[in-house]
Length: 413
Image (cartoon, rainbow, N blue to C red; front, side):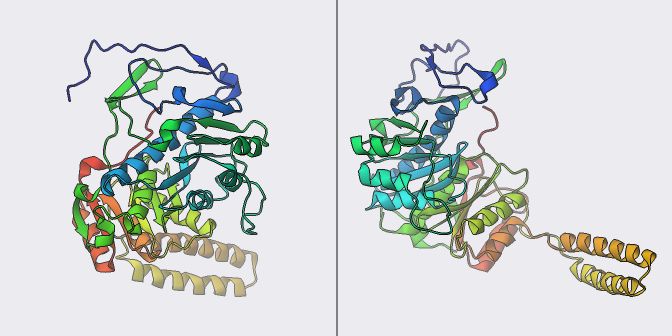
């Protein structure tokens, strides 16, 4: 593939006015197509069925549609051209639910919406199947679940190949909900352009468009190889499909990101964090908040783990120091004087700080402690052999990808 020509010119189509900008003070907003890129799933090719799309609708709809296209193409390559029913739910363009089912589209919808039932409120959903009245009810009405705590999903945007008349009547009951359709979603294909462009003020960044898909042939090393995770043309094996969900959501969310998937659905996502430990902690926290058990789940990390284990070489000394401070605090409180109470508070503050220092587990340790059974991560970093060994010793089946296939996204635009 030749580098982008210095004489390459971008021709823009006629702007289409949108309901409002990202923030109202930024009005007006428009959708402008780039001529010459014949993408059947370009946002300008969607038909407005109901509502008035905004800048946010187009931006977030594009992001989750990209994830759906990625999942679909990965299944197409890994499962001999076969593709399941897929649903992706997002909030502000980051996935908060994603699922697939080989036989029942209603299950794909239900699992995607219950991935994070709190975050999906006011969010967006895309499917690769038409929406009839029955499926529309699944997108409209929350099942009888006291843990969710509301009766309607409250989605702002739904993208699908088509909507039946009855589906439009039901989903259109919410004021300002946007329904947009594109028949190309029935067979979603990758972005056909060679280049990806992002505006940064007066300038534009240009790079090759993403084109990497998670398939067994792309794995450079398996820790504790498991055939079910290395599926080759067998769509009835769910583990690799679950890994696809974790990988696609992780690779197309805001970096840094760690994702968890289980039973063919996304159950947790920790994205947009400055370090990988925070990604893992947030991911596990969100999974637990949504009522999911991370045990036996599969993880994805969009870049390597810099360390296998936290530095706990001085843990015994910390424990002894905490014990001494605790005894001193009790003695100070027993004195029942103002000075004693202040001294006790100082001791307790120091104990809290030391406890925090004693819990320096790294991302791999946290995932192992949570009960994950495997995952996928780029094979890179100074301590990659230690990370591999830790996962191997813990019995996790981990797919390691070539270093160039990390999943950094959304650094601009």
